[in-house]
Image 1 (cartoon, rainbow, N blue to C red):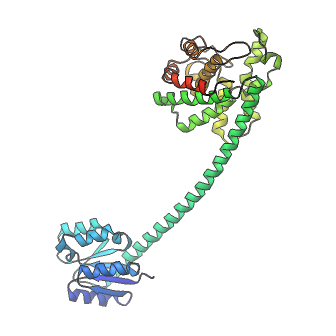
Image 2: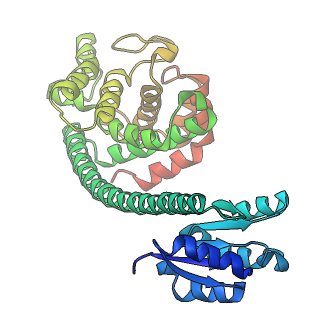
Image 3: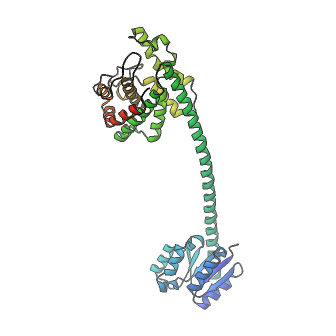
Length: 365
């Protein structure tokens, strides 16, 4: 239905006729003298009304109840209402605008002024409605596109996770360790990282980058894939030279991540490189390979360093038996497994029980 009708709501007959004469050449006119008839027309044919000219002194008898009702029913947001005024008080005029009336025409009516005002109001209002429709359509289109992109991103993320898990499992299989090790490392990392995030906002950790850090931790030992079997599987004590070879898994792992593993996720690759290279650095500077000290070590590498130490202590290896969770906890907080920051140890103490539950959940067969 075409919007081509102007509704005039005016109880003064001379004013109604004057407005009809001014506007009838361009618009269809429906003129009524009371609010009941006006509301009835709006109810029955709202799609044909292009503007409403209303003497708000009519509904003023009811304390603007009719205008309030029309506003509640969204008529004033779909159709432009123009006030017809004579000796209107400032308070009443202000109230009309508050309800959503968009313009006013003062009596006596000057034809050119009335025509131009009505035409301008209708044009602006129609443009506003068209703009709203266009925005709505564009929003729906973007939402659909975003939904498709989200599905594609989820598929890519799943593919990346499968690849990461496969690579880390190859390393652990070669080390004669179970795949549970990687699951524990990821869960420990997420758990401790969340504790750090909650206690220390200065590290600017978020749930999103903690998830990335947890996945990146899966590749912390990928450099061990190039360490000779006679060293990595040795049950006895390593010689000094053999220990230097073992230590090289940090730099070798970083090199593999930088040059061999190509994932379409720069943030993940940056975290994975940093963790692989620096998860054996210590807060007092006595770690390797770069001898980083204090906050020179990224919080991601600090977190993985602690959880890797805890997992090593609580797991059975070819060269040692597993320590109890309580013993492992004490060895870490007392510095027997290397020096960690006081902040990290505080965060660790907050999740001690969750670490114990993770050990039970992903225990080695």
